[in-house]
Length: 280
Image (cartoon, rainbow, N blue to C red; front, side, top):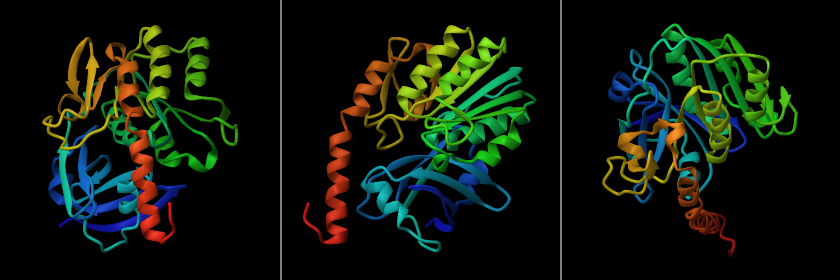
C-alpha cells in the first residue's frame, strides 16, 4: 500500500503529504487528481496531485481539513500507509504555447494551480500569477509560485500581505493598466472562481476553471460530481475537472455544493466527539 514518506504543515489546517506512489508519479499530468481513502472505514475523497517526481517515485498531495475524512487523513504520520490511492484520474490540462497567461489561485486552490503553472511555463508561456488568501498565514506555495512567474502578485483579504483585497480586484487593476492576456486559469473557492472568471471572460480572455463538486467514485458512475456546462450535463471526474468558465452554470454548481454543508458539519462534529469523549 502507498506509504507517507513526508508530512508538512503549510498553514492552519493545511497539510502537504509526500506519498510513495511510483506508478502514479510516472503517469500523472498537470491537472489530474487521485481518489484517497485514508482508512478502512473512511470515505473516498478527491485530491489534486500538486507535485510529483517520476524518477524518485513520489507524488505530493495538499489538502485542507474541512470535514471528517480530511480530519482522519490529517492525523496520519510518516510511515503510515494509505488504504486506497487510485489515479491518476481526470483529464489533464490542455497545455500549449498560448502567449501571455494569467494564473490565479485562491486559498487551497493554489495547490492544483502549481503543476498547471509549471507546465504552462515549460511550454514557453509568459506567466502572470495572482495568489490570494484571507490572511498572510493562509497563503500557500508563495515561493514556488513566484519562481515560476514573470510577474507575481499576492493579495490578502485583510491586507496582512501584498495587496489588500481579492484576486478579482487585482485582475481589474491589471486590465485597467492595459495588460493583455491570451489565456487564464483560475482555481479556488467556487464563488471566487465565479467572480474572477466573470471579469476575465468579459475581457475576452479564454478562461479555464477547475471545479470541485462532490465526488465519490471518480469514474463517472455515481453522478455526484455532475455539473451543467454549455447547457449539458458533464461529470467533473471524467469530463473535467477543468471546464470553459464561460459555459458553467455557476448557480447550479454552488447550490449542489451548499446542499452538503450541514451533513459535513454534523459528520465532523460526531467524529470530534468520539475522539475527545465529549458529548455533542
